[in-house]
Image (cartoon, helix red, strand yellow):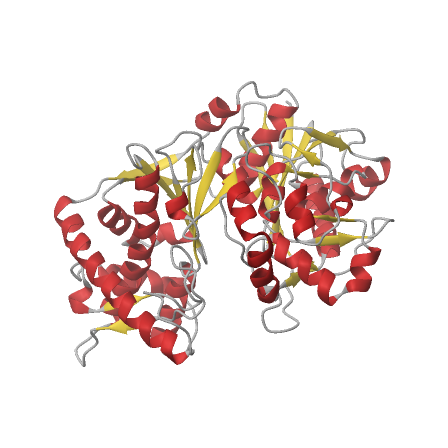
Length: 504
């Protein structure tokens, strides 16, 4: 039977997934690789580690399924990374990843030079989460390498080039450079020139379902793939995830509770009132966009608190389960304990690096389960701020939220999210949405799947549906007002401490 191989290059591991002709998953494996932090704020990966992971993963696939047929290859990858290549296609430096913050000075400069143009063409602000400041940093601080470079690629585009020999990117990843126009889905040379960069270093643009080449003889030998198999462009991980979760219509959304929490929803256009609070991105299907809320303190905050309460500083997932069970007996509002969950600064809607975790209402009687529930409530109230933005920009608001990620397994949390949001929650059983989306896009490009939307929705697996409890929703609405007042108070404190103006 025909099958599609998806290669999902994540921030910590390469996932290999096979999808058969009926869009059913027949194989999943993952190979980890390391991330380096050579200096404060620098987060890098070695592209050679990705190719080594692919070689290892394909060897294991062949050992497990020696007769597996592969009729197409697709890609998903972590966004906004920069891989710099010379004229021979050799890597000039480690990949600067999305979470790298070294280019703050370049971000400030770009806001002054082309900030309004970028806002008009992309609907986004300039910040370190996008690729353009990273490119400007390389040119300013490593001019010899920049002069030698002939092209830069996104991470998954580099891995794809190892199979095809073709250097190209595609629209969804390219949009995260801040140099692609939303209207044309092509490079905006006015932005590129305004940033002081050379347009010839920007790679050719494909669409996610375009064929990007075929497996070369050298790649076939190295990665145990059939020579000549078509390789498709693929997409950024969030764009592929939107396909894998069947998100094509306004009113649909998905919330993934990982170390960070990501909250995305299809939209018809950007919203100026939400500028700087969420970001806007090209969907894998032409004509569609999605809005993205990025919350840096999802599982990170839960895991930190659990370690703090453990007594020995060790994270044990059974301890999370125990605290979750105890917290079921604590009423909404955690008996007056209120937490601002910003261990890593805040993401949406504030994006303030000075924000810190702050707990109000502690007393000598406060119990661990009250702290635990308050942590979850603080994260959820922060997520609800993005939900309200989505409700405002989408006609009719959000009809449902598809919930996934490791945090969805914390027993108390999914129902809490339903109660805070006041919206139906569908618990997704698909943990491989980005890889599945990449496989569907490649399969569509190869003619194996006739309709991307129908294929994605047919494969959706919803384990449970949760409805909000009206009384608790009213209680949380009152708590949300207290939460925002607490944020305003804490914000003034931290702004004064850092010698900055008040943010509120």
